[in-house]
Amino acid sequence: MQINGTKALVTGANRGLGKAFAEALLARGASTVYATARNPDRIDIPGVVRLPLDITDSASIGAAAAEVGDLDILINNAGISTNAPLLGPSKDNIRREFDTNFWGTLNVTRAFAPRLAGGAILNVISALSWYAFAPASNGYAASKAAEWSLTNGVRLELADQKTQVTALALAIADTDMMAAYDIPKLPPHVVVTIALDGLEAGKLEVIADTPTANVKASLSRDPALFYADIPAALFG
Image 1 (cartoon, rainbow, N blue to C red):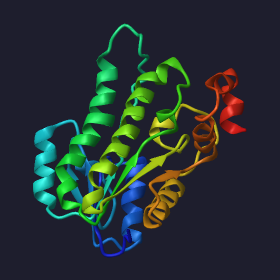
Image 2: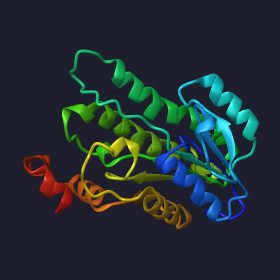
Image 3: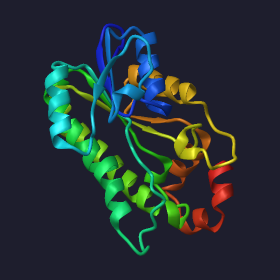
């Protein structure tokens, strides 16, 4: 999948990774980049086509699909984290996370998939697709595990039309979602460069940082070893 000359759409492009994706796609020669958000007025990227898109709303998805028409690359970046434990007093925020991270990603994919023959989809998953870290992140982790499985399933279902489906997995990027954590973080443009290099190289899964690589490597081992010392398991 070569980006130069393509028509691409990025969800959640008003900030963070989404904004960096839109900027990088333009820099790599995409002919048209649709930068989407619930409120497109918050998008300040020169050269993009701003487009309203709420990935939790079927009417909004349908309107965006009708506006865009043909498409070569879909970047499913939009997501939320609500600090929801699985056994807390309410399930409402867990449902919000699944409505966005799983159902929103799936519904946008379903809307654009028929136009992506010979093209590509990149889904932003998480190191938390593969492990649980703290109660406040458990709802998010469950939704991202579901999104990883979704990505693998969609890849199989779109194989006949030669749509490349790539997962980007990362742990720690310098975005609003990670603002409360005083730890080293990758700048969004670095993550996006790794992701788009992987997309153009035809990779099915792109691992953006060392903690994520360590988590993925641990999956074939006894989980008791990982959970006995999570910091060491993550950072080596």
